[in-house]
Length: 306
Image 1 (cartoon, helix red, strand yellow):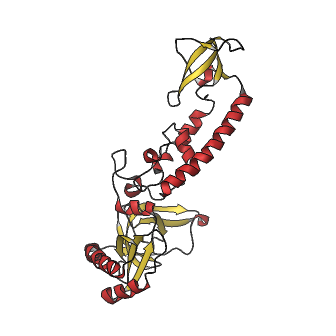
Image 2: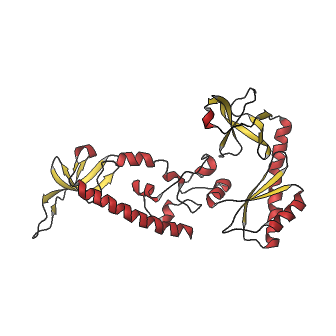
Image 3: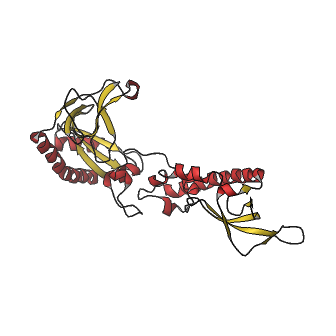
């Protein structure tokens, strides 16, 4: 086991492990650490703890010191310089007529490098831009192209739920999200209703998916024939969270001369109280639904790209 301290450099950024270096630290402390790109200013978000050696990438970088007033002042000055850096860089971008959108800028703590983040539809030849910026700032320049999800994470905003974006406020890493998650949760498959402001599927589709998936096991589909204590029935509606199946009883079976006759009254059952009448037919239906899902997924992906 190895003692590590979890450090975060941004509000909802990823937590990185560092060697505590024998320092007396507690959660919330601001520290100066050595990273691959130089000295950085971060916040302790995970108390010193023991971690298995196989879960870390050796060798661990060390925490240099606890931040003092001088360090905090320098960090604050770096934050203030960001606005001017963005303005100057945008002027250079306009000068070279580059098809790119500036998102954010970041100074390393020791002012050895400045990093500009941008989005673009394709590759951008910014070699001349880098030369101009190096002449203005007199330090190493790095331009980093990011995706639309990373843009939303940096910029922030309000989601359709009325709250701050998860990726900007607390979500450290993006997790894979699929259209099947929306289907499992009985959500509308309209791309505008299941997409975030980044134009991609909402991250929150992932949060409750496992719960819905477990609750949906054994639940019939709408229109399916089931067996109940009162006789055969047809499913009219299903409420997964309440474990409630709304049905109409079959009064007369369908035959060549007459259509199926159903009761006018509705009956409610739990999934433990019913039996699915035709498992083979249900499996075939599930397979067909999966094929439809794949086709729908391709269609929605095309819409989201646009």
